[in-house]
Image 1: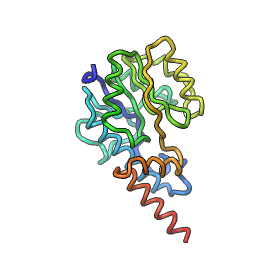
Image 2: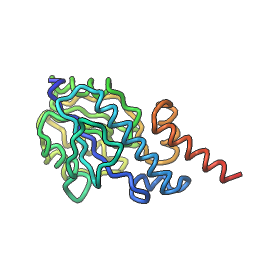
Image 3: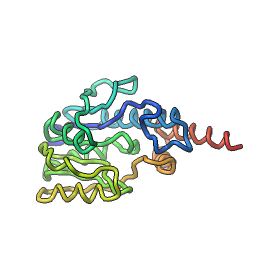
Length: 212
C-alpha cells in the first residue's frame, strides 16, 4: 500500500505577523515568516521526494513560490485545528499520512516508513517532543477521531492517542517541532543543509548583531 498513500501537509501561508508568532521576539515578524517559509519549502520538497499517490497541501491562505510542482492545494476547512485536520483527511480520503510545516528535519525515508506501516496498521503516530504529535497517518478517514482533541497543549498527544484506541497503531520516533527560537536553533542544527537552517542562521546573526 505504500505507493497508494496520500501525503498531506497542513500549512499556513507564511505572512509576517500570522505565522510562527512565538518566535517573536527574539526574531522580528518578517524573520519569523522567512523561517516559516523556509520550513514549509523544505517540508514540501521532502514530500515531493517521498513515495505517494498524491501529494497535497491543506493551506490556510494562498500558495506562493514555495509550492513545488506536483503538489495539489486544497483549502483548510474548519474553525479549530482539530477540525481542520479532520477535514483534511476527509477531503483526500484514505489511506493518508499528515504532517505539519514545522518539522523541516523530516526525511523522505521517514515518510516512506510511515506509509509502509499503514500496510499492517490502522494508524501511524509520530510523537513530538513538546507533547503533541508531528505525524498522523490513517488507513481510512475518521473525523471523529480528531474532532474535539485539544490542540497545542502538553497533553495533545496523549489525548489524540486516546482517540485512536481500538485501532492498530504504529508509533514512530519522537521529533522536535519548531515553536520557539530555542526549538528553531536545535532543529537547524539537526538539518544544517536546509533552507530552514539558513533562515535561522540569518535571523540569529541579525539578533546578535543588534545586541552589540
